[in-house]
Length: 263
Length: 117
Image (cartoon, rainbow over all chains, first blue to last red; front, side, top):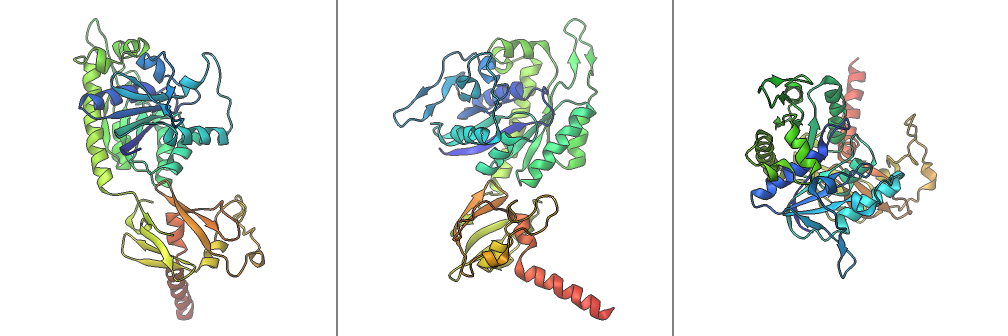
């Protein structure tokens, strides 16, 4: 597999919208003409298949590699493909590590410009395995604006720094709510917290995504908002974030990660 | 952590057995093979809680040397040793910290300070 940019989408806290952000960013990048893979590494709660409306399981090619499911122009592999509905993944670390390896090397991704990886929340086995297995381009951190989420996000950032995985930037999700009836802007979780955290930690701020019913509905229906309502404020926010992300990825890639090891 | 000091450009062989690292800031470190084996940071060799050395130096062969060095993500290497040991993950900043010539220098400065005092 030849992939130009490998970008995990991570968070400290759960429920901040990593999967919604991953799916929409992947689609926004694909719209620019890039070849994009989306790997759903959230073993505990894989939600990418639902968000992209994937119902058929992947096939296996002649050399026994998993063929990613092609949906909405993305190549997709998810833990959800290999679990029965309603079943739980009750796995210890070594199993998780093996699965991550399988998804990286046992999948016929082909040539990709971007591989976006939706990760489980926190600083657990999957995220650690990813950092140890491949030279990542950099990590995107998703957080809601409230302090409690940002505090945990900072722990995740500290982990990535320790593992020398560059942080490509922070995205503030559920940034504010615009009432569809009166148009009033309501800042449910506060606003600007992620931007301030990014400034303080000297990390790029990639943008704000509003808390909006159409984004949620589009994801539940299997056709994320970037596809279904490209002119909506939500879709435009994702598109703007994706272009900032692409720029950061380009910058990071130039700084070079690969050490020449000859021993 | 991601300062240029602790980022290697090239990791290669020095002589028969030793390991040489060329760093982004131009510095070159040469690690005698056995010394590097004795500095293995894995939980078997170094107590995770107390940081005390658990590895018994006399159990490590005099001619121990790396068989294979592989990169781990963007932050470390792992070394497969001739004595069968392979569980150590040597982070780049750790390797830089234990660079033999730099730690000699640090030792020398602290010695000098003691003399001056």
